[in-house]
Image (cartoon, rainbow, N blue to C red; front, side, top):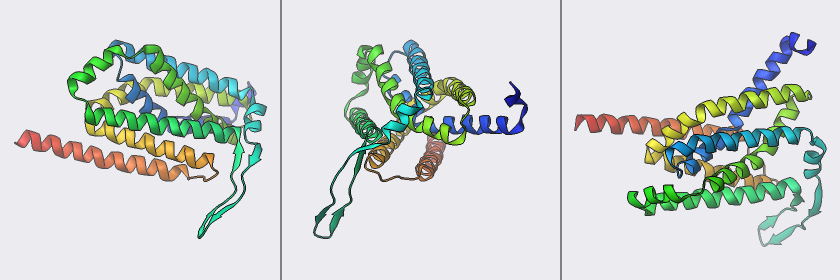
Length: 249
């Protein structure tokens, strides 16, 4: 294990772990929303099972790097279309593009549906639904989204290091961090209805970016994360102001 005697190895490991946690923020938001439909005692097991399966899937992907690379190969390219001033450039269709397209549609549809339910259904109906939702179905949804996000996660890791052992350790560490904090994040989000709507809006935005990636229009993730954190800070300020007004009234 001479590799761990080098300072650069530890720097790469910490960098990879940090990036994996950042890339997992959308996972945690989604998990917080869907597990809220389960009874409280079932929420933590659902989160942990979903994250563990996601970790195993990512490790499996590492040993199938050739498969990941093959998903980037185009097997069909659309023609260029012109409708007056509107020009649609050729779109390269790949396995990865199809996965991102399906994932983006699922995320937008799921988030929109959740938002509609929160706006339309009363509290009594919400409590009733929480008891009837299937534990297995919730876990399957978590795993499905984790699989979609795993491709970006693994490609990012491979771009920073070609040492599979280092990447696996970073994946395990980042997943442990997410397990430790997913419960707190989930309770915090579900405590405030306005934060739930904001979280669902983030998921719609992330779904849209997946659709853009599917048609070859890359949106820098830095812009997305900045928008998320900025909106979150504004909402936290609003929550604090509302609390102060309630205490003063």
